Image 1: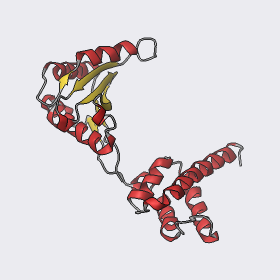
Image 2: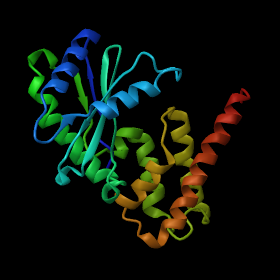
Image 3: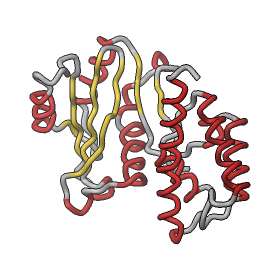
Image 4: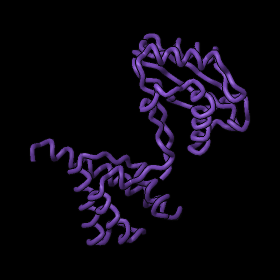
Length: 225
């Protein structure tokens, strides 16, 4: 299942600000510091409860990188890429594939020039793939898989047996305390399980059912039962 890559670096604040300064002063053919957009981003933080953040924007002039703007912030002991966009109308909707291509290029060919051995263990960069089993744990995933593999895709909870397996999954998910975003659930059905576009409305209905079921269990549990 595909996901947006996330990048953060954790060091003491002074070290991160020194890293940011080197990034600003050493452009490449791929990216360069955008003073105008950075000033605009830092002006907007005033009065918005964001005074502890320092923003920097790096822009690519290459169409291969979709004329993208990479937004970086430093706060306390963390540096993070928090957004990537493009002001060019052709690339206004980057999507996941383009976004991930840009962030990988920005890290490996821009930031990495300034990283030495002292950054070992300080960099967190998620992969492009995520596993539903790892997200949920083995027991919850087994219950989910048991429902998905046997259900009638046209009406996934209409049959009594399908409904029972669905309830078993939802109950185990709730008891585990793990969070499953409805959109991730729908994406898993589409990408990993291969539910075709003809079932998009069914998938949406199941996303709604998942959110409702967890909300109901949470409310009921909050009553001390």
